[in-house]
Image (cartoon, rainbow, N blue to C red; front, top):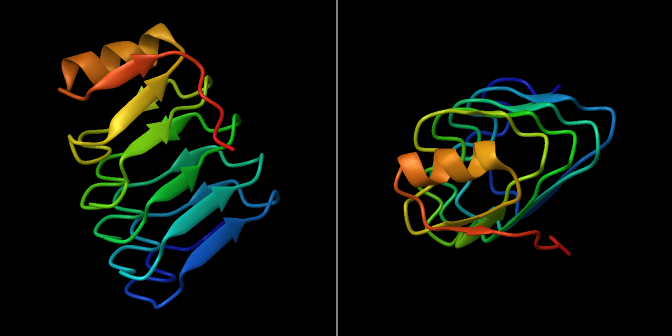
Length: 130
């Protein structure tokens, strides 16, 4: 578990969340303006509210297939983030998971419906994150 606000406003540039972490709590990396890349290994189940909010340099996110929940504002304010590949197992989405100019790559009807109902451009296909 990465605790709430653990790295808020930090100067880190890249993170790799190891396999034994299953949750990133609210605002864990919020406002970390130098963060460019976030990689999640396969055990993460949820990304909570505001986790990466206002990480303005974040331009690459690799989410694991184990992810089931992306909560409110998880990637909102990440101006450099232009696309997110939504894993197949994500079944619950919060409000405003990212900026509206971020393209969502989806491969399930649930994710496509979320994107459409919330005004996101999306591609209904499988796109490799690597």
